[in-house]
Image 1 (cartoon, rainbow over the protein chains, first blue to last red):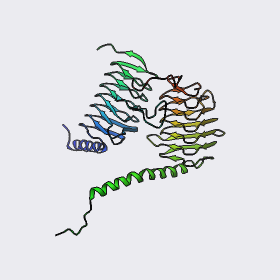
Image 2: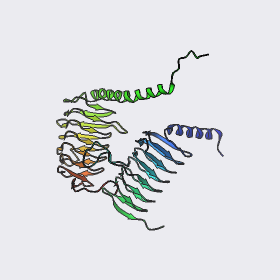
Image 3: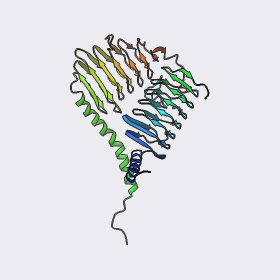
Image 4: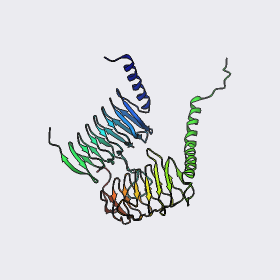
Length: 182
Length: 196
């Protein structure tokens, strides 16, 4: 049983969170927004149900840079402060994933290794599947595909496919542990 | 009966206003950035022309800081910081660009060449608790997100320091340094395209 004033305050909190997320194209049920959340760029940002954006430590940046770029956060995704998602094409975060503090997710290198450094290389869509845990200060470069249930240690740099249920760490990333089924 | 109000095509006017905003806004931001840089770098001895700071910065100058022309400091979620301790020298060449959260700390000497690019959260400090040794970054170097450059390191011209790497040894020119600790590999031999 909830008292009327409590349910009213919850209602107002929900409205306030929706107002903070007004730049998103789709917001699911019961979003939680704490601290500062920056959503900019011309592209689409879509949020699933019960998303938690905790920007109290540092602002969370969701940057869909181009007009056709797409950032999708699935249901129950939790993002900690200082996380920065920069999409030029698409970043998809699956349900139940957690992104740690100050982690950087980008689907474009922004500068080519060789040639003219002021033109953009092609972007590669980036996928984080369901139940993935990304540690703080991890860097996910273009080409990353974190498969179901794998976890990423803090400070790891990843730019390729990580199989399901594997724990990776280090720079460049190495497998720390393989999860046995169950 | 004709309307007394002259017909104004409202969508066209709005479109023109949008276009005007698109032209004016970057210039206004640029002017603000130049003015902010003048204020932030007021204690800097040698300051080039057209130094722009698009966000807040922490500048502490007890030594000698020399900034080149046309520098850009981008603003973002964390302020960049420039620290120069007494008797130290911090030199930055022309046309160098800094993203947000960059921290440069000089106890003895840090010098950055021309046309370098520093991504967000890069750290350069020439003292690490064990030793103090000068850092030299030559021209056209690209240091990617979150890299840390340790004391006594010389990064050669046109080299790239990959994201998240910790550079403990010298990097020759035209080299990619990546990993922790950073390994050097020739840029000509790095064949891997992104995402493969």
